[in-house]
Picture 1 (spheres, helix red, strand yellow):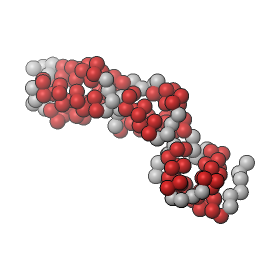
Picture 2 (tube, rainbow, N blue to C red):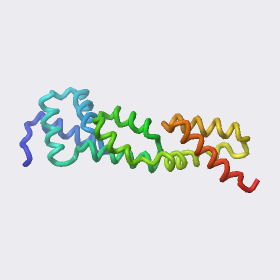
Picture 3 (cartoon, helix red, strand yellow):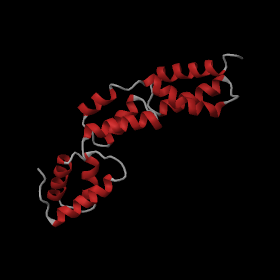
Length: 160
């Protein structure tokens, strides 16, 4: 059942829809954006309720979108992914559920392949330091980073 919004609520809704037009957002992001724009808490709450009813805001779907997007374009470890979702205002139970399905080894390998190209012709220590540091900055733990570095090194120089 759609609720009738008053004119200030309509302006708030228009602002929220414009904000959502760029990419999916968490409920917290939308609330913060609307509050920064100066809308009253009552209007913000009414708009968020309306968006939920229309299924335009769903933190579980947003968290899944964020994870999938990261896996495809900029792989992250569970630690970094958890931190990003927390900064987006996603609840801990949702985060735990979403990051459970992250394959860190595959994500680390995907991320490191691109970075490893920059170290063509480097010795092992330079390769290990550069690629390993990159992976740790992306939230992968030391063991996963080292395993990935060793795997990539072996693949690159197996014929040497």
